[in-house]
Amino acid sequence: MVSDQRLFGFKPKKSSFATQKLMPMLLIIDDDKELCELLQRSVLVENINADVCHSGKDGIFLLSTKQYQLIVLDIMMPGLDGFETMERIREKSNIPILMLTAKSDNLSKVRGLRAGADDYLTKPFDVDEFVARVISLIRRFTQFSVIDDTLGKLVYKGLEINLDEHSVTTEKGTFELPNKEFELLLYLARNQGKILTKKQIYEAVWKEEYCFDDANIMVMISKLRKKIEPDSDKSSVIQTVKGMGYRFSKEV
Image 1: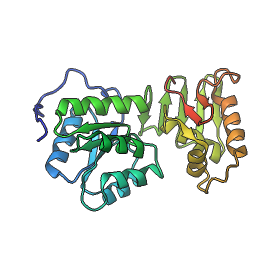
Image 2: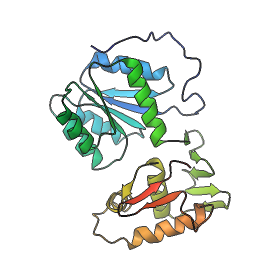
Image 3: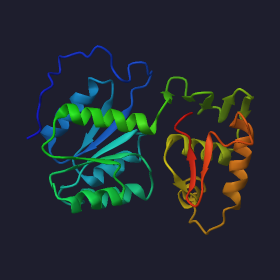
Image 4: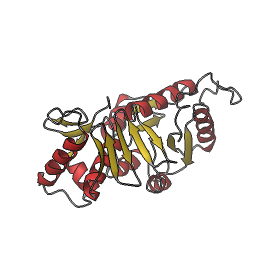
């Protein structure tokens, strides 16, 4: 049993995401319906919305229809289990995943982390700890960012991406971006803080199988840096991670 210590009539003094115009979205995938309802209510207290589903197949479908900031995924599910669900999600997305497991052995934890989980909780767990980990993961991967759905913008420190106009605004001015440049910047920004390989970037932006041709990526990264970097000689926004790929800085 999960420890239900939180009364949902309780109102915290200050929610972690109270200043955001659009509440972060969480996807909970677990076949335990009672647990899903409890977790859904617990994060709502912190101004985090949550969709729930009870199978890996339904979770993968929901992920294709909405923009989520975090997935909570149970490992022990009938049919498509959590490990296989995670592997399929990782084929298309770098969204952070919090793994829930009833197995306390290190082998299962290691397998989950290697399959793509960013953190894990072993059942039974305390609801307050669950909420704390959810908030930490969302902050880690969307640090300093605000998603404003009413204005169609992603707002970072010193950088604003307009989703409707395909433009970016910095201290250098406002630039309307060509489609591929915009898609590349958006992909990097939505995976803030995560190292993305050239293969991941190419297949997400060009939607073709990666053939080890880095020229297109390098040219577009260079063009974006000239427009968005405060100092184009210093890669403080789009960082090169030697031997691995690129990362949209957590400090932006």
